[in-house]
Image (cartoon, rainbow, N blue to C red):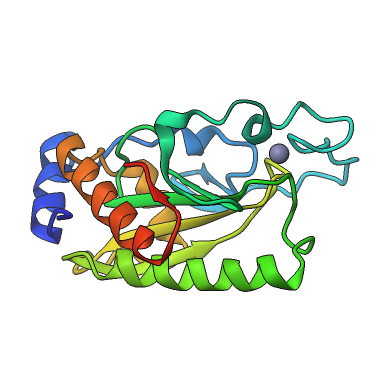
Length: 205
Ligand SMILES: [Zn+2]
């Protein structure tokens, strides 16, 4: 069962520096990170001029698709004939972060009505299952698709009671907060996999 807000807070305080702040995660160096400090104030970066976009992974002219090529079986939480649910290999700052992929190399918008219906049903079940874990406040469902062309939806379970960790910023706190305990994370993966398999497919975690 996921950690409570108090447990996560205690872990963050333990990992913080003397000023109470956690270190800036690597996303601070990402080209797409939109903020920078100027004269002690946080301000938007100057917008870069337009360029021709680089092809995504798994797109024509881009690097080969890692999902079709070598999806690590150790990261699979649940799967069926058409879908694969994965974790990222290790706990992160939020209690649970999962990614749902099509087995076939398709993107959002490419699904026929059958697959689109399956996506809706699996997403709905997954949100209900993850939100049903103790101390989960919300499950955010996201699709960006700016890195890989292979359809993947993100499910971010954020803790209940940490009011700073909400909305789209919960995704950034996932990088900022120190990762939680592996045994807790593994047990929660097992619970999610087993419950999802009640409707079909195979639990792998
Ligand atoms: Zn692919």
